[in-house]
Image (cartoon, rainbow, N blue to C red):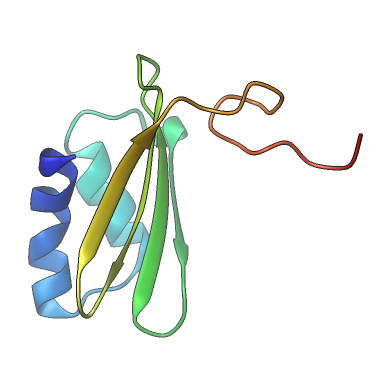
Amino acid sequence: MGRVKSALEPLRRRGDFAPDNVREALTGLGYSAGKVQAYQDGPTGVGFLIDIGVAPWCVEGAMSRDSTEADAFGGYPDGTGCEPPSGGH
């Protein structure tokens, strides 16, 4: 997760919380553009989700004025890859 944080840290320090710029920084690490999602999370925050396609499969996190966080997880067995399941049982 260090690579992800390192790629996003310059954006955070500049106060650049544009989802498109976060997506561009993450695809610059070699992640497929179709597998990287970034979305606005309040006025000074961006959340992101990467489907990396190999174990641990998914990286999700957020960037705000205060910090950049990234965590790996194994996906959702009853969802679609890195996307949580929708609906009820």
